[in-house]
Image 1: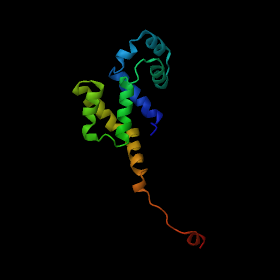
Image 2 (image 1 turned 135 degrees about the vertical axis):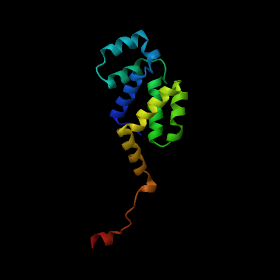
Image 3 (image 1 turned 180 degrees about the horizontal axis):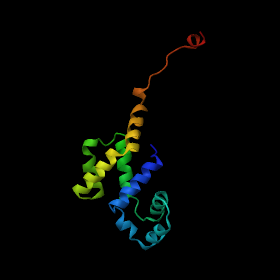
Image 4 (image 1 turned 30 degrees about the vertical axis):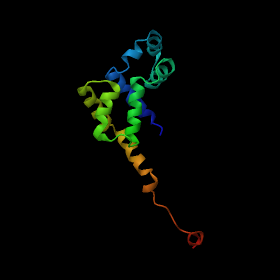
Length: 133
């Protein structure tokens, strides 16, 4: 599943608010490139291009949110996933959890992913002769 670019912006906002990528952003090359970035999208691209790590916190958060939207992570364990995979304190995990749960774009994406399952589709079983009548 592809994430809506606005959800990616939301992820970058959370990353900045809680300083999740501080280790990555302290790299002189990345720091220099980020200073020229004018949007969240540019920051995401810079981190992806110049990071020596493949799994840095904002990427991990993106994957957690994708799994949550795809129903691979139930909301009941979302906080534990955030806390464990991002190595953050419980109060920060709670705050990020609330932001995720309250985000309207994520809610819409969850609803869309539920509607888009084969089990939920109603198949039209009319034959060609019935359609011509």
